Length: 202
Image (cartoon, rainbow, N blue to C red; front, side, top):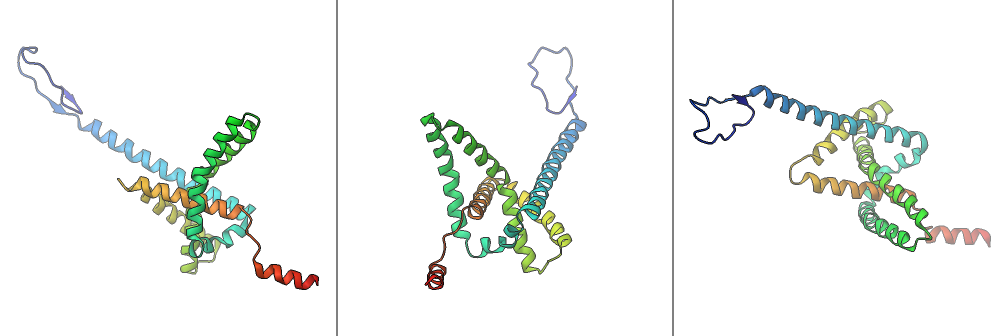
């Protein structure tokens, strides 16, 4: 008989000899299916990142212009916002659900939270790609588009590394969530601008 794995046959159950041959075709098929699965996963991730980038380019071009400052200046703030958002938002949703009167608000908040987690890796990839493009002075949209594909592949590979891939994936998710929260939450007005407005008013 031939199969992918050899079976254990009890003694005195077969009159004669047992000849086993490993089925190489089944192992090749499993390897092909595994490779196809990874390629499909990679292609889906690249396509999703490109879609989010195009939406940002169309709806919020200011976010893309400020993306470099998120990595250079505010990386600690971004990580803190992402970590707090990852922990606090589900707790707030649970509290709102327990209150019953605000269950509808909690469901909306939970849906937005899940959506933010879905796009967090894409936002991190886009932000990191903008930083790399600024370092290499890539300004054209076609060049940024090509670099974004490369950045998506690198981020995807990092998240698939054995043992540390899950940790890197969590860190990327936290940073992406922090970038989103930092971009959405309005910044506090600086004291200098307040003083200037007071002088103008007087």
